[in-house]
Length: 316
Ligand SMILES: Nc1ncnc2c1ncn2[C@@H]1O[C@H](COP(=O)(O)OP(=O)(O)O)[C@@H](O)[C@H]1O
Ligand SMILES: [Mg+2]
Image (spheres, rainbow, N blue to C red):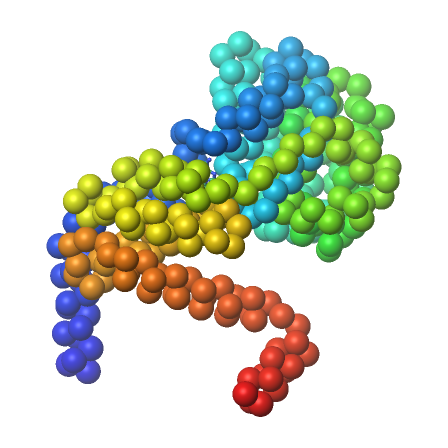
């Protein structure tokens, strides 16, 4: 017991003394960067499509595709925030509603969230989905606004509940007289769109924006800018950043993975009481992240797949 106490003391004192990070929050997944290098084209395309909302016209519906970590969520949130600020500045009524359907994974919960965005509090149970949707439309139509609905990671909703809500939303102009709804659907799953009902597909995918994977040089650039804010300049050098970028580029250019590697490398250096992050720390971080990812994948598998995996493991 005493040994653990001493180890804990040591961990605390390293953390207190550590000068590796100056602001580790900027490496967290939820941080929205104020600049998005190598996504200028997507930012301006999205901005141009949404701009008519400022003059009270309904923007086209948009489908955004790209693999994980290609900046889809960050770019969309960034552009919406800028659009919203502009709308306030000129006094136009735009409602931007972001819904992640991995979290809000039923049609009903998505509608509750849409309600929240216009100040409507729907009960969590007790009324039908159709009734909830009707109340939502009624309140939305009582104001004269353009509502931009972002359905992020939309594959989760479609796989679980089908495309009924998408269909209804894409037909909302039939039910609304004063307000309008535009939809931005975001997905990592390129096959998803092929499987959609053709009616939904044609009305939702009026415009498509593709996010290609980043290459190693682009990732390095993204990491460098972020590292400047996150780390004490003495604690990190370019070799460490290049390594994180090239390891993340090896699979596909996933910026989330690259940023995770950098953050975890820093945390390992800190835990060890080191003054700088070394190449070794990056390799340890890589292993840690891969182990976490494998156990996450396994934990979400159905029981039968787990048993098959166990059988194979026992054979080897
Ligand atoms: N061009 C970029 N510049 C800076 N950071 C970026 C850029 N693209 C992605 N990121 C960061 O990488 C991470 C993953 O991006 P995200 O938008 O969540 O990817 P996606 O939604 O495509 O899976 C986020 O932390 C985001 O801030
Ligand atoms: Mg995303």
